[in-house]
Length: 514
Ligand code: UN1
Image (tube, rainbow, N blue to C red):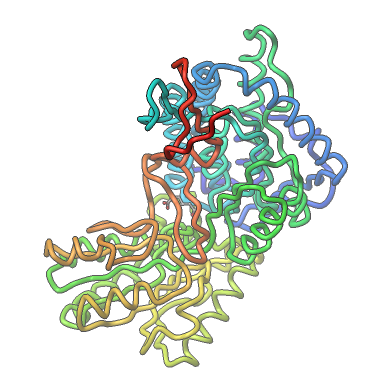
């Protein structure tokens, strides 16, 4: 049988582009490599935008915004509905492209596109629900209310590990909220970005032809480039909101630049996610959840499980089970059926993993796994066996996010100790507890429990649905994207007081007779 894994990456890239109807010619140049982590093959070289081109595109986005903000929100929703339809039609091809360029399993690539479809559906509903409140006024014959208005150009900086979904969370919401979008994708996944841009541009063109007056060009723009492109977005006074996903280091730089000009930022930065396993837990379920969260996507999700805090009473059986899983889990070509762990993004990611493991050993850790694997798949293909690391304490290396399949294991003697360990790191994205004890579960979710933006019971830390707000506290940056009322970050709130009486009473009983 011939499976997609039998084909060289170039052939598969060709197939995906053909199915997407995407011509790469206008994007070709020098500077940005399109690379497949599964075999390290470089498929194409693309050019970056110059700063002058980027400035012009941002200006164009702003002009488009001035028209788009006056388009009724449900009509804006219709555009996003059509984008969702287009994504449904191209799910296979786009999913394959994600698997190729980000090194994800087939089902993870498809899952990412499903996440895009889901957020489009969500945003369509939202387009009729951008509600403000009506508020009781203390003055007779007065009414107060809130109205929500578009902000302007929303800048989006996204990371390689979710090269399409994170863009869609921001873009679907930003568009229904009446904003324009300027996107700087990771320089490691430019082709996924071009494909998304192509599908949105096609949708916009079809939609614009049916609008009167015609829709302006430039509503969604793509800025290809490196770090300097991110800086340009962060510093541009035209960018009203900047939503940035990536490392804490990047976020710290961006946040300062945006704050300097009183812009608004939505930051989704590093995670160092923990799971607590209590004595009452269903250990088999916990072992499966741990495996998906820790080794899935080769540990390269910001929600990946990095710390396991297991109660000493169940540490032995759980670790024995995990030891077996870690020894047998299949590492290999992510396009091959049965493989659960694909490649790391590149050689730098592999080097960082090895450096973290060396530090863990120095800090008293015992490492199982972690060595290079599947070298036959390519000299520049960087696979690693997932690593399970027993640590004597939550030392420096455990406090740090390493974007790789390393799971540090700590033991605890009580829920209080577990919560202190869970909260005892600088990051605060995702967390979970495995327990069948109602008290433990509720305590973990309470104000004295997990300090993360995501806290789960009896499921892992990764794989969040789009319906909830996504993001976290402390060094994770505090931003919220995706579902719930995250849309409010893409709009500005106006408080309106309307006097329908023939008098002019002042608030707080102030007298000012003229
Ligand atoms: C990310 O890693 O940047 O919750 C996003 C998850 C995915 C999104 C992760 N739905 O794991």
